Image (tube, rainbow, N blue to C red; front, side, top):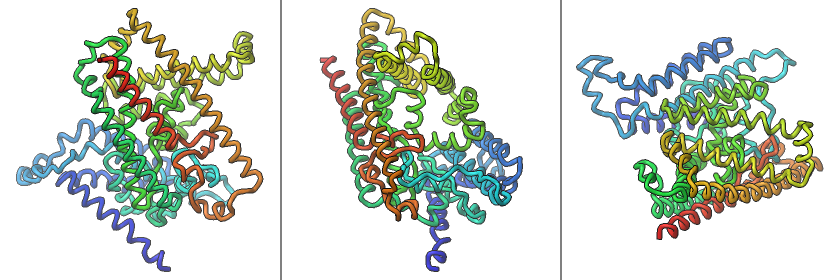
Length: 518
C-alpha cells in the first residue's frame, strides 16, 4: 500500500526538476520544446491503436527536425505574439532551445509508438500471438544493459502510465536531456514506478572510477597531441603520410574517448537516480573489424532505438539491403543536414550492404576456389585480411563524417599514392592484420564464456530467485564491468579490458608521434 501511495510522487518530482532545468538552459524559450512535446502527446493519444499512428509519429518527427534545422530562427516571441512581447526574446538561457530537439524527437517517437503498441496489445483477442518481442533470460545478459532493462523495453505498461506527466518527464529527463543515452518510454516509465535493481552500489562505484580514468587519459591525449585542432585548422596538409596516418588514428581514438566520457557521465548520473539506461560504448574502438559489429557497439542505445522503431517495422533482415539505406539516411539527417554527414550515411549504407551480402555468401557458397580456401589452412588469414580492409573503411567513413570532412579525407587518400604513402599503407595493413587476428582470439574467448553460460542454463544451475525476480542482482560478468552475452550470442562489451586497451593504444600512438617529431 505504501509503494502505491508513493508511486505518483517520483514522476511528478522528475517532471518538476526537468521543467526547472529547461527554464534554466533555455530561458523563456523553454516554452517551445514543452509545446512541441505536448502536441506530440495529444497526437499520440489521438492516433494510438489506429492505422494512422505510425505515419503520424514519423510525420511529426520530420516536422520537428525541420524546425530544428530551419524553422527555429522564425520562432521569436516578438514575431509570433507582437512587438509588446519582444522583451521575452532577451532571456535565451545558456543553450539554444532547438539544439537538443533531435534527442527529444527520439523520446517522442518512442512514447508514440510504445503507446500505440500497448493499445494494440490491449485490443489483442485472447489467444492471439503477442505483439512484443520475447523476454530476455536473466542469466543471458543482453549487450550493454541488464536483462531487467531489456525486459522493461518490451513490456507494455498499463495504458494509464502513458500520461502527459510521464511523457514530459521522459522527454526532459535531466541526466539524459543534453546528450543521451537514449532510453525508451517503456523502460523509463517503469523505472519511475520501480527503480532499477540490477546494478548495485559496487557496480556504480566501479563505473565512476572507470570514468575518472578515462577523463585522465583524454586530457593526456589531447594535451600531447592536439589532433582536433590540427584537423580543424587544416595544418595537417604540411605533414607527410606517416604523420597524417597517426593524426587520423589518434583523432578517431580521442573521438571515442570524448563521446564515451559524455555518455558514461550521463549514464552514471541516471544510475545514481535509480534509472538504468544502455551503455552507449560497449566495445573499444580498437576491438572492431566489421561495420555491423562496430555500429552495434558505438552509440548502442541509439542503435537499439533504430532497430526497435525503424529497422524491425520495415521488415528487419528480410529487407536488410534496403533498410540500411533508410536507417543511415535518417541517422545522417537526424545529426545535421550537411554534405559530409550525407556522404557518411551513404558510405555506411553501401559498405554495410556489401558486408551483409558477402559474409553469408562466403560461408555458404560451393564455388570451388572459395570452398577450397574455406576448407584449407588459410581461411582464417583470408577473413583477417577482409576484416583489416573493413577497419580501413571504418576509418575513412568516420573521418569523413566526424573528422576532417570530405575534402580532408580526399587529401588523406591522395597522400597514400605517393611512395612514402604506399609504404605507410602497407605497414598499416600489416599492423591491422595482426590486430585482427588478435581480435579473433578475443572473440573465441568470449564465445567460450557464452557457451559455458548456456551450459549452466541447460543444467538448471541458475539461481531460482534471479529467475523469479528477472533482476535479482548483477551477474558475475556485469559486476566486473564486462562480459555477459547478448541474445544473439555476442559478448557484452569489453569492460575494464576495453578501457585499458584503447587507453594504452592511444597513449602509445601519442608517444610514437612525439618521438617521430623529435
